[in-house]
Image 1 (cartoon, rainbow, N blue to C red):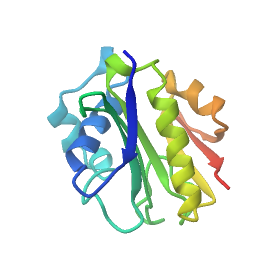
Image 2 (tube, rainbow, N blue to C red; image 1 turned 60 degrees about the vertical axis):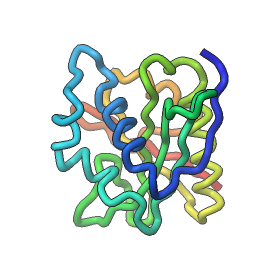
Image 3 (cartoon, rainbow, N blue to C red; image 1 turned 120 degrees about the vertical axis):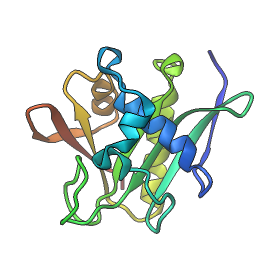
Image 4 (cartoon, rainbow, N blue to C red; image 1 turned 180 degrees about the vertical axis):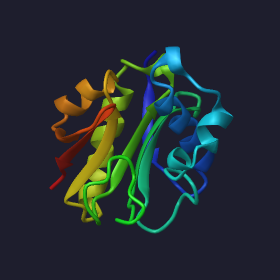
Length: 163
């Protein structure tokens, strides 16, 4: 599979981001949950609920036919309602999801790099994320300059400077 393009995420992309959130949550196929179960979890749903609110930004990868194959987006969370990868107020937390058949094709890396450019141009100094232990995406994050700043029982919080 080759041939994808990346475009900015817009206000009409809530469904696309929800689809990619399900992909991200189901990175481990042996523990995959149905879409409805993923999106009924308020700790997961908060990453797309009300998209696109002020401060949200992202990008979508599409195949040659215009179908979404991946997305990477970021949003800010308050200290009293932090996301899983929260490090500080004002540091956007990113989510990256790629359709299973498009993984290991360069889509995730291209999305991550584009999100970094968008974050820098929006004035963000850092991006954060949470990645489950064992998730193969952690190697991608490390190769793109993300460093672990906190390790919990099941996941790591990682940060990268974007300026």
